[in-house]
Length: 302
Image 1 (cartoon, rainbow, N blue to C red):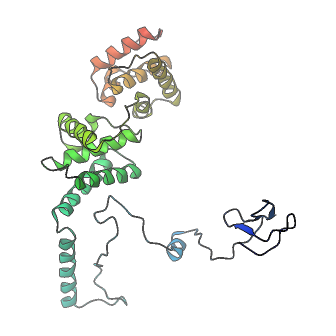
Image 2 (cartoon, rainbow, N blue to C red):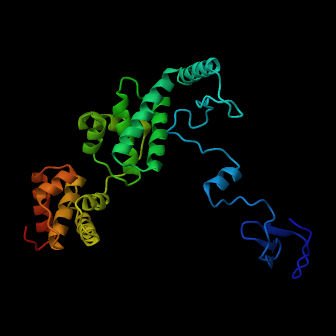
Image 3 (cartoon, rainbow, N blue to C red):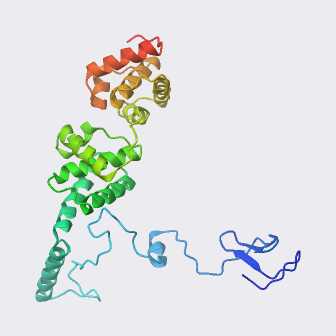
């Protein structure tokens, strides 16, 4: 607020909107000025050096890190504050401190569990090329699972895979159970059982997988054009409208749509190639292909 007088109504209460750079009368709403200058310190940065120099806060909290990134680490460079090299005795003492510092940071069973699980989470996510945002969400969900005591008697790797699978479905970045099984070294059955258990116990609202979300990835791996992707998406949307995908696996339907779209656009791929990319059998591709072709009245020569 300011004691400047409004020329319209005579009110003295003036509100200054720092974000818009405006001075507005609090009574009648008259904009008295729209070019206020921010006289505060300049916080913008144009390179990494300026960013570090002008940073007002530390690093953001990271759930994928053991201590959420809020931990002090002892430097291993072997130099003192002035950059002078430490003596061999001081260096040995420093290394012992580092060793015991690491041991103390994972002293409890929960910390040990998180240490193993978060490393596994990073590994599987890297293998499946999952975005950083989803990794953070999966780490937070895993921490909730540990806090509720739901991991007791279950493989850490299975819980990690199930958590990642649930998060990928929530964010519409689909990964199949086959891919999860391949990345984690477990069976689809084990991951699926753990996933259903977590959904039930944590009351997760996981949406049904939309086969349309598989189209871009399948088309990309098969080196198909954007026209084929668009055609496959249109085919699937028609199939969904007519209820043709009910009770069908989303990956099989999406793969069949990509196969048909490729034929329609003159970018032919074999059923074997499409099946390998989608992680389904050629029989599944043929069955879904025949269903879509018949029900959608598609004229195509295989």
